[in-house]
Length: 416
Image 1 (cartoon, rainbow, N blue to C red):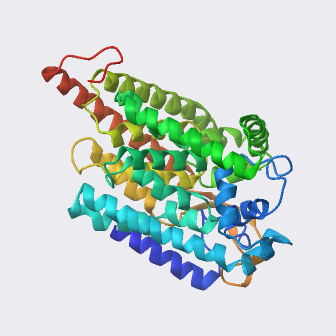
Image 2 (image 1 turned 60 degrees about the vertical axis):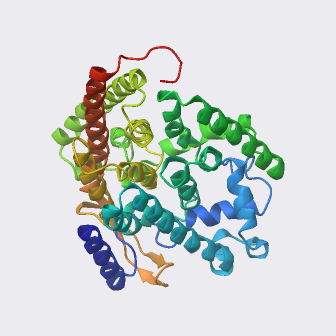
């Protein structure tokens, strides 16, 4: 935690000197809170799905409609940023709520380690990056903690938490499948019904965002993202975007030797596939001994395998890191915990400059000359996510093997 605090202090020093946040924060220094205000712009006018081609479920637009001032969105999202004080206050309040509920969850899991783990998450890069982007993960995180953490034992509240997280971020359906692996059918059923009901209510309120629209827009979004290589590589949970760099317009060989590129192209598919296979084997083993692993462990392996395969953005690490930091400091979880703390370190070490900009900084309100390029983190962070999945999975396989000594493997669908 002290290392994370030190890196946070270094970030503040960097900002005071340069007027903008260092990598891997958004290199468009004039577009702070971009995710929040660009989405709120379409929450206050028609066309979110047929014009803007949004992939967000309707809940995002309902929430932003309720927490924004409509009169501020007659112009552009940039103008709304200075006008909409309610939205800015909601962003900061969401961050404070995130830290508070993380503290509650970590304290109930282990009061001895609650301070360092909460501090690392609160001042760590994933949550700060989420705050700077103004991503709706800020709002989804408390619901995720309720759904998968030790905050409440109520099945109803856990189901509501699951429904909110999935309707904000659909890929969070993966951790919910931990109920299926552990054969907890009633919680899974309740969560599924609640998720569908919340979607239908928000769909009716917005009047658009049907499954067909979301599917069509997702296909369009995947095609769009494929051409935004630098955005994908800048802060990724997966090595997959690195495979696209050779095909991009970046003069890659000016910065990286060809042998290094060839080594990456050979190693990345192997790392991804082996991690997927290990995670799949672990989930199959967990099915045979449903009580050998905690819900958080199974959810972490499910989510981690997805983040290794592809990256929905570096900020999605907050969900994985929360699940990992619920683990006790022993056994195979130790490498995963060390990796989690390393992923919380703020900032990066530059290797080569690719972009030099002459622009404004919204945060400092002054002209800045930011430089961004290839960094050590581009190669290390996805590897740490892989290490998390491997360490949790191998430890899980050991636990399942030990469980076989006391309980026979359980087949079928019956709850163990």
